[in-house]
Structures are given as C-alpha cells and as structure tokens.
Image (cartoon, rainbow, N blue to C red; front, side, top):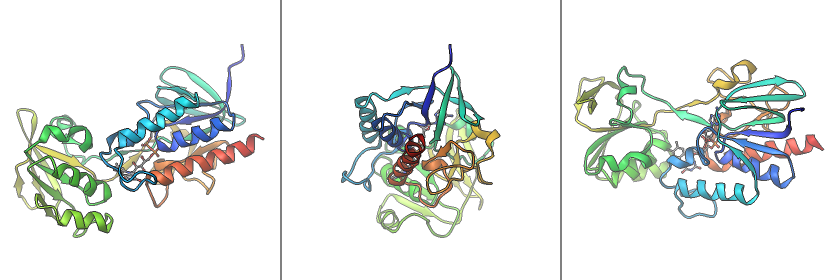
Length: 300
Ligand SMILES: Cc1cc2nc3c(=O)[nH]c(=O)nc-3n(C[C@H](O)[C@H](O)[C@H](O)COP(=O)(O)OP(=O)(O)OC[C@H]3O[C@@H](n4cnc5c(N)ncnc54)[C@H](O)[C@@H]3O)c2cc1C
C-alpha cells in the first residue's frame, strides 16, 4: 500500500506551529503537527505575559492551553513524537521521528530554541539541584532563600521580577555594564528592593554542597552564597535534525525569505528558529500563518 502523503507537516507545537496549523486546517489542508514534548512550547515556562493583544495579563501555560483547545476544536491531527531527520526527496519530504516516517509535500519547521547554559564543568549535574532555566517551574523551591539570576535581556529581567516576589534576595549578575532589556523592565528592576544588580561580572565557578548548588564564584573572586541560580544568557536554535539541508546560518538559525521559505523548495520555517530581529509571540504566530498562506497558494 502506498504511504499517505500529507499536504503539510508542521514540526513544533509552539505558538508559531499552532497558528500555522489553525490556518492550514481551516483551508482544508491535510495537515499533521508534531511535537516531542507538549503543546505551547516555551509558553509553558513563562509566568506572566502582558504584551499579547486581547489579554491584559495571561500566564504562559493558560495561553498554551487555549491554543491546544483551538487545535482540538478544529480536529487537527497532533502526534507527540521527536523529529530525528528530514529528508528532501524534491516533490515530497520524509519526516523521520522516533516512532515513524511520514511523507509530506510541504514542511514547516517551528522548533524554536533552547536556553543556553553557562558551560561550566559541574553545571549539568547541578541542573535541577539549584540550577534552573525556568522560573515558573522552579521558583517555589527557593521560597524565602537567596538566589542569583544571570543575564541582561528581557527574559532575565522579566523572570527576576517574578522570582523577587517569592525569594528573599536576588543577585542579578550581568556581564556588561548595562542591560539590553526594554526600558520598562529595567525601571521595574531598579525599583525592586530585593534585587541587587552586579554588572560586569561572569560566573566562573559553581560551588556545591551535598550535590546541590551552594554558591557561585565571580571572575573577581567574590563568592556569593546562593542556593538557586536561574540562567537566561541567550539561546541555541533547535535544528539538529536538519543538519543535512544546509539552510542555517553561522549561528544555527534558519534563513528564510519574507514568506518563510528556505532555499530548499517546499521547506519553510517560522518563529524563534528563524534568523530575525524580534523574538516574540506575536511575530512567531504571524510568521507561521504567512508561511502557511504561501503553502496554501502553491497547493492550488
Ligand atoms: C523566559 C521567557 C519569557 C518570554 N516572555 C515573552 C513575553 O512576555 N511576550 C512575548 O511576546 N514573548 C515572550 N517570550 C518569547 C516567546 O516565548 C517566543 O518568541 C515564542 O514562544 C516562540 O514560539 P515558537 O513557536 O517559535 O517556539 P517554541 O515555543 O519554542 O516551540 C517550539 C516547539 O518545538 C518543539 N520541538 C523542538 N524540536 C523538536 C523536534 N526535533 N521534534 C519535535 N518537536 C520539536 C518543542 O518541544 C516546542 O514545543 C519569552 C521567552 C522566554 C524564554
């Protein structure tokens, strides 16, 4: 029996992939959306979002749940599998997961990016034992304790503000002499009493006791006693499974045109995985939609 050929397979059930799936299904495309984890992607790690139109304030997991409800209402086919390879057979593409191989005319890669780590020797062992990249998931373990947050962009400052409501004190460590986050976040940080900012510093050592984090040592030799460390120092795009396609730039992001098309015919990308200036929910959603609209046009 011939293998089923989908019109479109979307890899990634973050806001970008889900927005694409909504438009694809409403245009009657035979669409499948895959994710190795759960619907919502990064949304599941964000405590509070206050710049998404139609919500004054919404929690990331709540928004993720709403997106999944919309997929269910439209009866979009969803599978929870990890994509391991993407093979370009010109007219069709093969998507190889940990469980099966699927064939499709078009593919949209919306796999996002993961948060970067410090690269220190015992960091991996201390992940989940004091070190975290998700304030929403882990903040309550540090109730009333002293912690450090490292980073200087929007994510670091946004999450530090959330953590400040739960922990006793935060050392906000940034390698430069000013933050790159937006002005309103910087104002809030400067006006939060239990946040002490340490500029121009790098963490060079992680101190552990009984296999848990017990402090950090900075490049000037200072030891800071903290039982928690939240790391927000940038991202690594999740593109391992497309190594053979040669569609990424030197930083590992996928290069696309204004329609979301890569240089490989039939392969599109959208959201945080793409090389661009703005990494926000609203444009991740719109890029998924624009790519789908182009695919719908091409299928006519
Ligand atoms: C701490 C933090 C706070 C933020 N706050 C805001 C905010 O307030 N407002 C705002 O607009 N933006 C915010 N952002 C940015 C926003 O979250 C992202 O721009 C957006 O979520 C990106 O969506 P995406 O769909 O491109 O990727 P993601 O949400 O990362 O989704 C990608 C999905 O792909 C899946 N995947 C990856 N690899 C594979 C594979 N090989 N096989 C199958 N599935 C795979 C993942 O499991 C994931 O579900 C924040 C980001 C962070 C880190």
